[in-house]
Image (cartoon, rainbow, N blue to C red; front, side, top):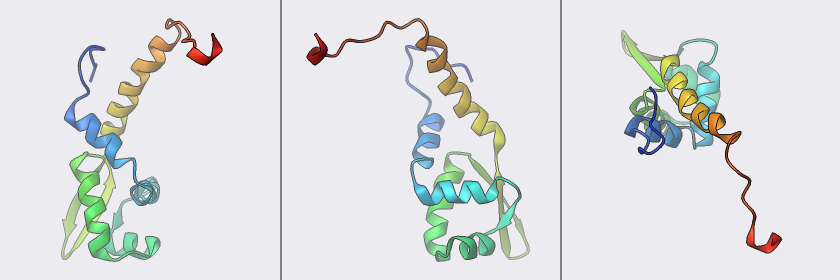
Length: 110
């Protein structure tokens, strides 16, 4: 996804950064970094109730940062790495322009 510098970020980019703004959701992502996990395993590792975790997993799914699959009565979650690449590419646009932007002078430094 290439962003035009004059356009607003897509809804999915906004949802992604919103999802990354919560410490519990970051913990979920850290746990999923190495392998797919069942909701029950996530609840146990994070010592949270399934209802609390469901809210956070819903946010991560809406941002497409995680994917799920059902096996029997259990739901397993895994990272959706292509969406992380999208967020990384969005941020890379700022890094590309940082070399050419002049330094701003703060009013109190004048």
